[in-house]
Length: 138
Image (cartoon, rainbow, N blue to C red; front, side, top):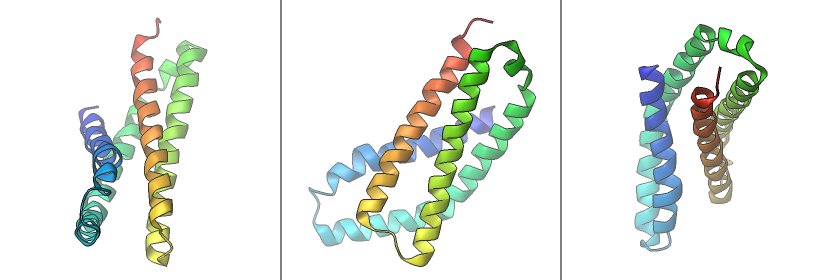
């Protein structure tokens, strides 16, 4: 649980930073400097994020297996866990698409922005649903 939470905090914090902090600054910073910074940030993210995602999804699958009996308790928990899992795998799909676009050199600024916003929405919903699992009455 701790590995899953810490990796999720790292991942969600990175997405939060990129969407809510970095994107608005792009309009205020000298364009060549911003491109250089974004390029360096992207290289660093490509080094770190695969390991972070491996930890999140590996620990998440272990947790899902460990708590599989929760689904039998009621339909509400099963529904929430199903949506949480679907959204989490959606995030993973986004990550894979970014990797493919990066290798094919088809990533554009617009695609990047759309993917970042989508991942941001996904992870916010995942967090809300995860919290909901603990506040449902048994």
